[in-house]
Image (cartoon, rainbow, N blue to C red; front, side, top):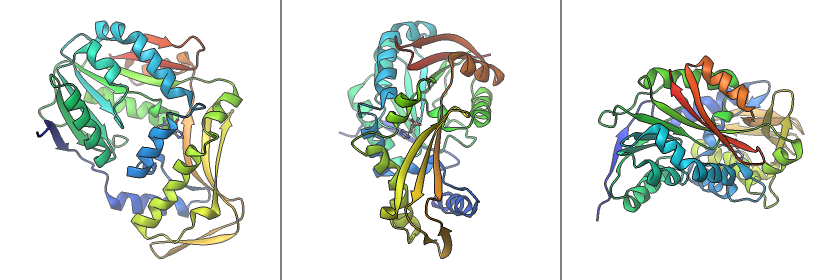
Length: 320
Ligand code: AVI
């Protein structure tokens, strides 16, 4: 049986050239860096799924608890017959908590990892035969347009997992402003936001005992080896993650274990021992801080739900 997932090509499609150009640009900088969006090849997406199951990584299970408890309230605010648009849909697990309660008429999953997206939307189509399922492979961090044929009068964006925390606050605001111009007045936007808390809890979440986050971070170097023919040995780098309190963000780096030279596309990059590639920021917010940011981008806070320990928050915003 062919499962009915309507696949759309969106622009800009994540292309190999952007990996090459962006990585080379990042490695040429004084503080070397790589965008966290490049974590998510097939292996990276699988490792991220495993991170979500680690006991130290509280965001996923906490957000799922919040969504399960709030699903009926969310459905009441969003109304039935909506089009649910999931940004960075990944394994599309959390959205299942909303589908039964909301009964949207259609679902659109947008993700940068094509194979992973197809697999997960096919599973959704099989499990929810009443739902019209669309998939679009796109880099939603760039300005994009929604595909024809999916749009309806009641779109509700779903951006879970505190993924917005991987943008710096100004880019997060710009991103929301982009969604503001994409969505009609009155549209909903459901966003998961990780909250500021004690340093030990935060740092443990990004340094799990099983070493899955370390493998996820180091997999970026494997990707450079396979896709850009980079001469770089992942064994010569170590995972590092810490909470930068001043900037309210977890920083992830790959630390060079020794002085070395690596080559990407024929270009040589020198590393001192201890020098790092900055691979990710994960900003943490207060509820008020996030609502103020959303307000500057033209979204009004309609409702907010948290867990009893105040670890995580889910916000229902309305496009004003
Ligand atoms: C996807 N994103 C919200 C995760 C985070 O917590 O910033 C990515 C991640 N990086 C390491 N662990 C999880």
